Length: 227
Image 1 (cartoon, rainbow, N blue to C red):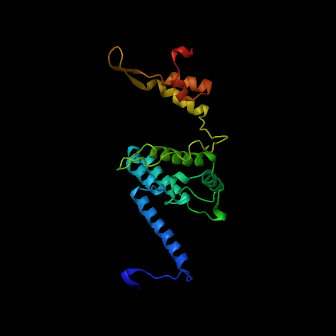
Image 2 (image 1 turned 60 degrees about the horizontal axis):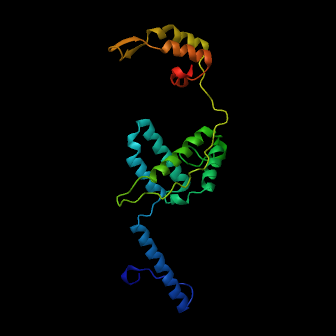
Image 3 (image 1 turned 180 degrees about the horizontal axis):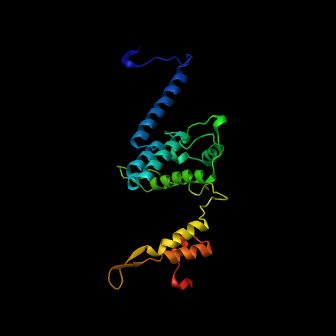
Protein backbone atom coordinates (compact mmCIF):
# COMPACT_ATOMS: atom_id res chain seq x y z
CA UNK A 1 0.00 0.00 0.00
CA UNK A 2 3.01 2.36 -0.06
CA UNK A 3 3.62 5.03 -2.66
CA UNK A 4 5.06 3.85 -5.96
CA UNK A 5 3.94 0.28 -5.35
CA UNK A 6 6.52 -0.32 -2.61
CA UNK A 7 5.73 -2.25 0.55
CA UNK A 8 6.70 -0.73 3.89
CA UNK A 9 8.37 -3.11 6.36
CA UNK A 10 9.58 -2.11 9.81
CA UNK A 11 13.24 -2.82 10.63
CA UNK A 12 12.28 -3.31 14.26
CA UNK A 13 14.27 -0.31 15.58
CA UNK A 14 14.56 3.48 15.28
CA UNK A 15 18.34 3.77 14.85
CA UNK A 16 18.87 6.02 11.80
CA UNK A 17 22.54 5.04 11.28
CA UNK A 18 21.70 1.32 11.38
CA UNK A 19 18.94 1.97 8.88
CA UNK A 20 21.36 3.76 6.52
CA UNK A 21 23.86 0.91 6.80
CA UNK A 22 21.11 -1.60 6.08
CA UNK A 23 19.98 0.42 3.05
CA UNK A 24 23.51 0.56 1.64
CA UNK A 25 23.95 -3.19 2.11
CA UNK A 26 20.68 -3.91 0.35
CA UNK A 27 21.58 -1.53 -2.46
CA UNK A 28 24.88 -3.33 -2.95
CA UNK A 29 23.05 -6.65 -3.18
CA UNK A 30 20.68 -5.22 -5.80
CA UNK A 31 23.59 -3.90 -7.86
CA UNK A 32 25.35 -7.26 -7.58
CA UNK A 33 22.19 -9.00 -8.74
CA UNK A 34 21.92 -6.75 -11.79
CA UNK A 35 25.60 -7.34 -12.57
CA UNK A 36 25.13 -11.10 -12.36
CA UNK A 37 22.19 -10.85 -14.75
CA UNK A 38 24.24 -8.78 -17.21
CA UNK A 39 27.16 -11.19 -16.87
CA UNK A 40 24.82 -14.10 -17.60
CA UNK A 41 25.33 -15.89 -14.28
CA UNK A 42 25.17 -19.57 -14.99
CA UNK A 43 23.00 -22.12 -13.21
CA UNK A 44 22.85 -25.89 -13.48
CA UNK A 45 19.47 -25.57 -15.19
CA UNK A 46 21.01 -23.32 -17.84
CA UNK A 47 23.91 -25.71 -18.49
CA UNK A 48 21.58 -28.70 -18.76
CA UNK A 49 19.18 -26.78 -21.01
CA UNK A 50 21.99 -25.81 -23.37
CA UNK A 51 23.25 -29.40 -23.46
CA UNK A 52 19.80 -30.79 -24.25
CA UNK A 53 19.32 -28.15 -26.94
CA UNK A 54 22.66 -28.33 -28.71
CA UNK A 55 24.32 -31.67 -27.91
CA UNK A 56 21.58 -34.18 -27.16
CA UNK A 57 19.86 -33.94 -30.61
CA UNK A 58 23.02 -35.39 -32.17
CA UNK A 59 22.36 -38.66 -30.35
CA UNK A 60 19.96 -41.44 -31.25
CA UNK A 61 16.45 -41.43 -29.83
CA UNK A 62 17.36 -43.74 -26.96
CA UNK A 63 20.30 -41.53 -26.02
CA UNK A 64 18.08 -38.45 -26.06
CA UNK A 65 15.58 -40.12 -23.72
CA UNK A 66 18.41 -41.03 -21.36
CA UNK A 67 19.67 -37.44 -21.45
CA UNK A 68 16.22 -36.21 -20.43
CA UNK A 69 16.09 -38.66 -17.53
CA UNK A 70 19.58 -37.83 -16.28
CA UNK A 71 18.90 -34.11 -16.58
CA UNK A 72 15.77 -34.51 -14.48
CA UNK A 73 17.72 -36.59 -11.96
CA UNK A 74 20.53 -34.09 -11.41
CA UNK A 75 18.29 -31.03 -11.38
CA UNK A 76 16.29 -32.64 -8.58
CA UNK A 77 19.34 -33.78 -6.63
CA UNK A 78 21.42 -30.59 -6.88
CA UNK A 79 18.72 -27.98 -7.56
CA UNK A 80 18.06 -26.13 -10.79
CA UNK A 81 19.48 -22.85 -9.40
CA UNK A 82 22.73 -24.49 -8.27
CA UNK A 83 25.90 -22.74 -9.44
CA UNK A 84 27.72 -25.58 -11.25
CA UNK A 85 31.07 -24.19 -10.11
CA UNK A 86 30.00 -24.93 -6.53
CA UNK A 87 29.24 -28.62 -7.05
CA UNK A 88 31.37 -30.26 -4.37
CA UNK A 89 32.72 -33.65 -3.43
CA UNK A 90 30.10 -33.69 -0.67
CA UNK A 91 27.34 -33.26 -3.29
CA UNK A 92 28.83 -36.09 -5.37
CA UNK A 93 29.22 -38.51 -2.45
CA UNK A 94 25.79 -37.57 -1.09
CA UNK A 95 24.24 -38.58 -4.40
CA UNK A 96 26.17 -41.86 -4.49
CA UNK A 97 25.12 -42.70 -0.94
CA UNK A 98 21.44 -41.85 -1.48
CA UNK A 99 21.29 -43.71 -4.79
CA UNK A 100 23.13 -46.79 -3.51
CA UNK A 101 20.72 -47.05 -0.58
CA UNK A 102 17.71 -46.63 -2.87
CA UNK A 103 16.66 -43.41 -1.14
CA UNK A 104 16.11 -41.80 -4.55
CA UNK A 105 15.06 -43.36 -7.83
CA UNK A 106 16.50 -42.94 -11.32
CA UNK A 107 14.76 -39.55 -11.68
CA UNK A 108 15.88 -38.16 -8.34
CA UNK A 109 12.54 -38.65 -6.62
CA UNK A 110 12.46 -39.67 -2.96
CA UNK A 111 11.57 -43.30 -2.28
CA UNK A 112 9.75 -44.43 0.85
CA UNK A 113 11.77 -46.56 3.26
CA UNK A 114 9.61 -49.61 2.64
CA UNK A 115 10.17 -49.45 -1.13
CA UNK A 116 13.91 -48.81 -1.15
CA UNK A 117 16.13 -51.24 -3.03
CA UNK A 118 19.95 -51.01 -3.28
CA UNK A 119 21.31 -49.87 -6.65
CA UNK A 120 24.40 -51.38 -8.24
CA UNK A 121 27.50 -49.26 -8.78
CA UNK A 122 27.24 -49.55 -12.55
CA UNK A 123 23.96 -47.59 -12.62
CA UNK A 124 25.41 -44.83 -10.44
CA UNK A 125 28.54 -44.74 -12.58
CA UNK A 126 26.48 -44.06 -15.71
CA UNK A 127 24.72 -41.09 -14.10
CA UNK A 128 27.90 -39.67 -12.54
CA UNK A 129 29.82 -39.88 -15.80
CA UNK A 130 26.96 -38.13 -17.62
CA UNK A 131 27.20 -35.18 -15.23
CA UNK A 132 30.98 -35.05 -15.68
CA UNK A 133 30.69 -35.15 -19.48
CA UNK A 134 27.95 -32.49 -19.51
CA UNK A 135 29.99 -30.11 -17.37
CA UNK A 136 33.08 -30.78 -19.48
CA UNK A 137 31.06 -29.94 -22.59
CA UNK A 138 29.95 -26.68 -20.95
CA UNK A 139 33.60 -25.61 -20.53
CA UNK A 140 33.94 -25.67 -24.33
CA UNK A 141 30.55 -24.27 -25.36
CA UNK A 142 30.26 -20.51 -25.88
CA UNK A 143 27.04 -18.58 -25.32
CA UNK A 144 25.68 -15.83 -27.52
CA UNK A 145 28.11 -13.30 -26.03
CA UNK A 146 31.09 -15.50 -26.79
CA UNK A 147 31.65 -16.54 -23.17
CA UNK A 148 32.17 -20.13 -22.11
CA UNK A 149 29.30 -21.53 -20.05
CA UNK A 150 31.70 -22.76 -17.36
CA UNK A 151 35.19 -21.69 -16.38
CA UNK A 152 36.14 -25.21 -15.30
CA UNK A 153 34.70 -28.66 -14.66
CA UNK A 154 34.05 -28.85 -10.88
CA UNK A 155 33.86 -32.68 -10.81
CA UNK A 156 36.96 -33.31 -12.89
CA UNK A 157 39.08 -35.96 -11.18
CA UNK A 158 36.36 -37.13 -8.78
CA UNK A 159 36.11 -40.91 -8.95
CA UNK A 160 32.86 -42.40 -10.19
CA UNK A 161 31.55 -45.64 -8.62
CA UNK A 162 32.95 -48.79 -10.20
CA UNK A 163 31.23 -52.18 -10.35
CA UNK A 164 33.50 -54.62 -8.51
CA UNK A 165 31.93 -57.72 -10.02
CA UNK A 166 30.06 -56.72 -13.19
CA UNK A 167 27.54 -59.15 -14.58
CA UNK A 168 28.47 -60.38 -18.05
CA UNK A 169 26.11 -62.10 -20.48
CA UNK A 170 27.11 -65.72 -21.09
CA UNK A 171 26.43 -67.83 -24.18
CA UNK A 172 25.76 -71.55 -23.67
CA UNK A 173 27.38 -74.29 -25.72
CA UNK A 174 24.00 -75.04 -27.28
CA UNK A 175 23.73 -71.45 -28.48
CA UNK A 176 27.23 -71.57 -29.94
CA UNK A 177 26.53 -74.81 -31.79
CA UNK A 178 23.26 -73.46 -33.18
CA UNK A 179 25.01 -70.33 -34.47
CA UNK A 180 27.93 -72.32 -35.82
CA UNK A 181 25.59 -74.56 -37.79
CA UNK A 182 24.43 -71.63 -39.93
CA UNK A 183 27.37 -69.20 -39.71
CA UNK A 184 28.83 -70.38 -43.05
CA UNK A 185 25.72 -69.02 -44.76
CA UNK A 186 26.50 -65.44 -43.73
CA UNK A 187 28.11 -63.52 -46.60
CA UNK A 188 30.14 -60.31 -46.65
CA UNK A 189 30.87 -57.71 -49.30
CA UNK A 190 34.38 -57.81 -50.76
CA UNK A 191 35.94 -54.64 -52.15
CA UNK A 192 39.31 -55.98 -53.22
CA UNK A 193 39.94 -57.76 -56.53
CA UNK A 194 36.61 -56.41 -57.69
CA UNK A 195 33.37 -55.98 -55.76
CA UNK A 196 31.51 -59.11 -54.81
CA UNK A 197 30.20 -61.28 -51.98
CA UNK A 198 31.71 -64.32 -50.32
CA UNK A 199 31.47 -66.29 -47.09
CA UNK A 200 32.18 -64.09 -44.08
CA UNK A 201 34.66 -64.70 -41.28
CA UNK A 202 31.84 -65.20 -38.76
CA UNK A 203 32.58 -68.91 -38.42
CA UNK A 204 36.23 -68.29 -37.56
CA UNK A 205 35.30 -65.52 -35.14
CA UNK A 206 32.83 -67.81 -33.35
CA UNK A 207 35.44 -70.57 -33.11
CA UNK A 208 37.98 -68.20 -31.59
CA UNK A 209 35.43 -66.76 -29.15
CA UNK A 210 34.28 -70.21 -28.04
CA UNK A 211 37.81 -71.53 -27.70
CA UNK A 212 39.41 -68.56 -25.95
CA UNK A 213 36.52 -66.99 -24.03
CA UNK A 214 37.51 -63.56 -25.35
CA UNK A 215 35.07 -60.94 -26.56
CA UNK A 216 34.37 -60.66 -30.27
CA UNK A 217 35.44 -57.00 -30.15
CA UNK A 218 38.87 -58.13 -28.91
CA UNK A 219 39.11 -60.78 -31.62
CA UNK A 220 38.19 -58.25 -34.31
CA UNK A 221 41.07 -56.08 -33.11
CA UNK A 222 43.67 -58.79 -33.73
CA UNK A 223 46.31 -58.04 -36.36
CA UNK A 224 48.87 -60.16 -38.16
CA UNK A 225 51.63 -58.78 -35.90
CA UNK A 226 49.81 -60.26 -32.88
CA UNK A 227 50.63 -63.74 -34.11
